[in-house]
Amino acid sequence: MTHHRPFVDIRHAQKCYGELEVLKDISLQVEQKQIVAIIGPSGSGKSTLLRAINDLDPLTSGEVWLDGVQVNKLLPHTQYEKHINQIRQQIGMVFQHFNLFPHLTVRENITLAPKLLKGISDDEANVLAEQQLEHVGLIDRIDYHPSQLSGGQKQRVAIARALAMKPKLMLFDEATSALDPELVEEVNQVMKMLAEEAMTMIIVTHEMGFAESVCDRVLFMDGGVVVEEGAPEVIFRNPTQERTKNFLRKHLEGVK
Amino acid sequence: MGLDFSVVPGFFDVILQGVFWTIAITVSAAVLSFFGGIFFAVIALYAPRAISWPMKGFEWLFMGTPLLLQLFLIYFGLIQIGIDLPAFVAGFVGLGLHFAVYNSELIQTAILAVDKGQMEAARTLGLSRGQALRHIVIPQAVRDVIPPIGNNMIALLKDSALVSVIGVSELTLSAQLAIGRTYRPFEFYAVVAVCYYIINLGMEAVLRRLERRVQASR
Image 1 (cartoon, one colour):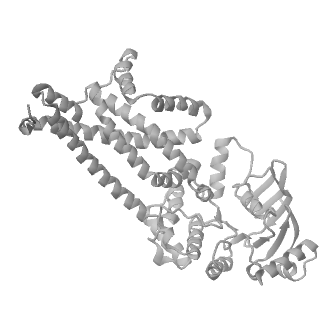
Image 2 (cartoon, chains in turn red, brown; image 1 turned 90 degrees about the vertical axis):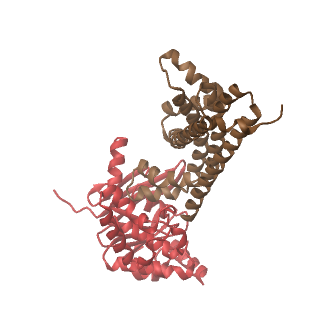
Image 3 (cartoon, chains in turn blue, brown; image 1 turned 30 degrees about the vertical axis):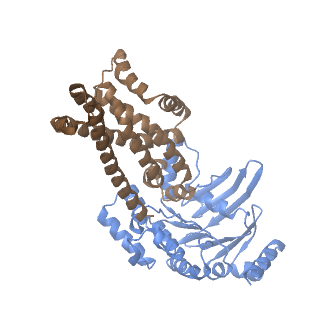
């Protein structure tokens, strides 16, 4: 018997910090090339859910599958470390605060992981770094240090660094939240470009406009549950749940 | 009997030899204390208790007792259990481990101060914890503590005079040798003091250059 398993398959995800239950039985399926936005108030569990996908925040119970392989399978410690490092190479992640390596140049930031983990030569690594920086429009910054870049540039380098591992899936954890408003657009442009290149993406965001224009599906989370999900026009124009309406109304007021 | 520095040139070779051995033991012990400090820091922070607790005892031994006693213990004491180290090696190990323990304290604090996002970003790319520590966390931690580690290294240079008591013919012992033959302590101790000072200046210059290089990559 064969049955189709979604590309990303989260089943009955539960996460507790002591007494506090931050994820309550969440299931989420994402198909290849889909772009899913997760929105919701802070503390709703959206980042925790995202970070469970590459096991940065391990679930208390439930399963995460990627492309037919269980991410959080039970293994003895050393075997599990090997397994998870293998999985993580296939999942790119972009953080709110960039987390570039400040002691390395832009080039070294991009080439470190491919050199260490894929054993590519210096020449191949340089070509890779140039390609990825060309891609995000920062080839002229290749020998800069992160401290010499603007926030928007840092985030574009962080995206290039993640892409250099040729991931199957990209996770964005509030990638533009720490940026000055005038720098948000350049990062959004790069993310739109990835969308056009058919990258599978899961995006935690506060930018409703971006989510509406780029994503195939939107999840609204609150209090550790998915309150409502659907096509962006439905969630943003005709939400059915009171909590979704309240959140969107407050958010719009905040923006204005 | 006034001062007479004219006796000094006759012992030029003895003093030069002293300078050589002082630099040799300082540099080699400094290298040991640097890498030993990183090693001890990683054990203290990440090793299971079965390993990190004995380390605590070891740390106490090196921080809580006089360096002179440690040198005696390593040079004279270890012979009794069959470990007969040459004086230079005993001095190198004693000085190196003594300052490794102090460097370890600095490096531990610095490792804990590196932003957690650095480890997360490295792990997210697929690096193991060991790889992330080696390539991402430790280089940043060490970079942050170069100035205080530099201070430790200057203290190490000065404390290297202690290895004269176990017979390493470094500067202080060279001076004593010359004094034994000439009975002119002031002249030779003064000359040797100037030698220490010049080596010290050299070390500070190297440290400053290192700090500048590190600053540039911030």
